[in-house]
Image (tube, rainbow, N blue to C red; front, side, top):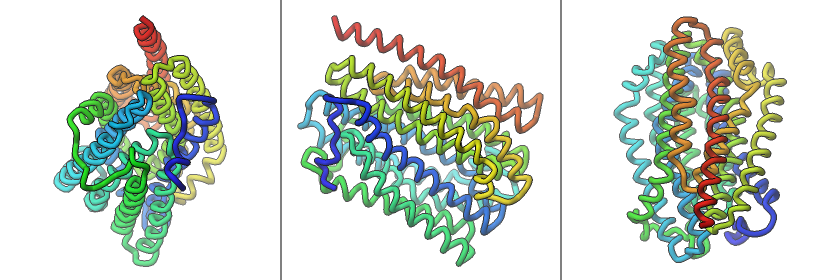
Length: 451
């Protein structure tokens, strides 16, 4: 697959077909990534024990917390390079590519070092069940060996997506993910390594995915070609990446922090509730991944067209990604909800675990598509360089509200169903505010540009 054949002209011609062709591989990439992560749970749940499953699941919110800040920065790199394309600054692109990879390597090593020292203390802080905490800490420490490679994959993929290439990141993820599943089965089923096995498989699969993205970039057309000798972090690129990406990363970090608090509350119901919640959470993630593909399309298409001064196309981009993202989310939510009984049994046959899992799916997944209302609006705001507004709204509408809910309502009515209700309520509040903010901000920006 040549690099020229993967470039998408986002500035001219039709939009619907290009957005769909951009979003579909991205959705497939994200869903496959989640399915491969779910394979860790499925294998330990079916071939090891519920304790091992809970040990892996206890890490999900914590891993998300530690990675979110740096994953947000990759969005900043996407906007940085896409804007250069929109403005026709081709001579600047190659330096930005090498800055992006330099940032990814630096971030990866920072998270790796922190993870080695803080694994068990952080699990203790979030009240991981005592019967799984040692296994959970072991899994987490091995997992952190994969973090530098995860960073390279995500930042490298952001570079490719900035020019419309969402296909080759899918190829890299697919090959790495298949390896992950095969190693899971080999190390857990054959060699009985339970938690150690799935952790080692995760590391190996991410090494392969990162290596493939690096390979693609090393053979790109000259503007995007990666050379290890040229890797350095240029100050101007770092500033732009931080200006757009840091608020997104901070939002993700605070969002994950609220999920850590919720995970701590889940932990208070015992290891069976942890296992059930973790199994059901995979389906939320799958729906989010599909909707998020249209969010990423909105960011990239908006970035290029806004930088090029094509404001009518920016409006069209928003209408298309908003309609498609929420529409596809509704269909997927309905499908998973109807098949929930069968799908949960892929992870566990424990009746109590299934009860908790079904409760979460019934409460959250029936309206999970509502996340598209604020994720897509916020993504298009970031595409126009406005990253602070969606950060503030998301922190207040989801994070702060959820913390208040846990420490007030749940403390009074300590029931699992009461805890789960925090999700749909926060989605409605945040969606209304974020969409309104997008429309108001867009009107002001376009009016200023017309003067």
